[in-house]
Amino acid sequence: MSADVAVSLSVLAGIVVLSDVTRRLLARALADTGLSEYAVELVSTFQLCCCTHELKLLSEVGGIEPWLALTFTYLASVAHGLTFSGAIGNPSGALERAYRAKLSGSRALRRIACQFAAAAAARAAVPMLWGVGLSRLHARHKLFGFRCTSPIHAPLHEAAAVELACAFAVQTVITHTQSVEEKYRVHAVAAVITTAVYAGGSVTGAVFNPALAFSTQFPCSGHSFLEYCVVYWLGPLLGMMSSVLLFDKIVPALLRKPSPRHLPTESKKKA
Image (cartoon, rainbow, N blue to C red; front, side, top):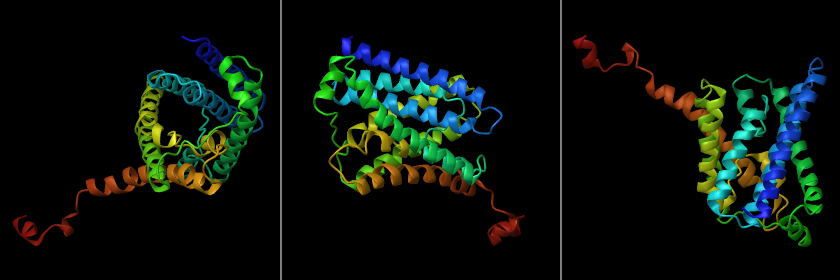
């Protein structure tokens, strides 16, 4: 393992540990104020975005092997799942919970605001961390002005379809593993996230999270703000909605037995 990778792993571990300590302290301090869920959302989304920035740097600038990048993606996803303490970290997920009446509309919107605020904070904080020059990779990235280019390598409609498909897959596994014990569920979700990154990473970076994309992809040159919105906001939102529509409406309707009055005439006569 190279020194750059070792430093990045230490940075990732430090972000998770510091975020978890902050999250616990804020949750206790704000327990009686009704604000703890928003504080947890802020810290957790900040953790997610910072870790993804570091992983993105390792993969795109550090040039680590794809299998190693996927391994780190899986491990980071497990760490997030085990430490988020009820946070969602994804605007699409907040809207899905609002649809299922697990969150009120106003609470969902406040959570989404927290997610985007944390995404913006991470986008500002990570270059400062890299600027310290903890590794040669960080120093080299600073030397080039922390530049990044668009990860979209397909026409916009294809890129949006990739983000849609990734979001559909992740939302589906999240929905259908609700009854699974948490320590096993996080591995199932992490496995699907890693598979989605493997399948769509070369086309869009496979973000399928509007807040995370706002932090990690929107600053990159190569496409306009509106084009990024189509791919990284509209695509994941439609993916989530497609999963909900399919498994909440279409599949139950197809599986529903027809009532006797809808049976063919010949069947009624035989009965």
